[in-house]
Image 1 (cartoon, helix red, strand yellow):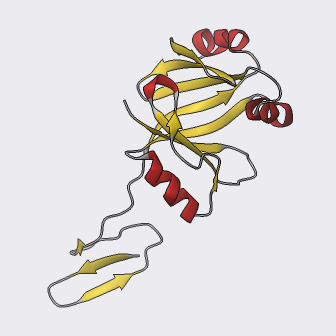
Image 2 (tube, rainbow, N blue to C red):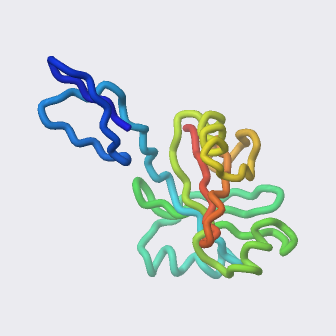
Length: 162
């Protein structure tokens, strides 16, 4: 709901998220929509998938990191970045994801100012917290993951930093 005012009368008009302003000033601000940081793509092997993302899609290799359960590699730059995620063992959560859904879109990463705040807001919206607190992510970032519990199984990752 947005609130508008004119010289004579203050009224509230339900807008379903859209602002319609004709000769009036909006008193409250709309919720900030975060920018997409990257898409997370689950693969069985980064080495096997690399050619498709570099040569096929024209996304240059940027960096690679290894964590206890996953190997990651970033391709692309600027507004077009894809993170390939390779499970180090089939028993990991990512390994289970690939076993049940196959390779493909794993998460949508959104850039936020504060991961802890984003996690708290997501929980209020009914999202299941995968991460209860912010944790270190790739490229020196801080991240937190939530599950919107949609049928497509795509997770949302909040990314803060550098």
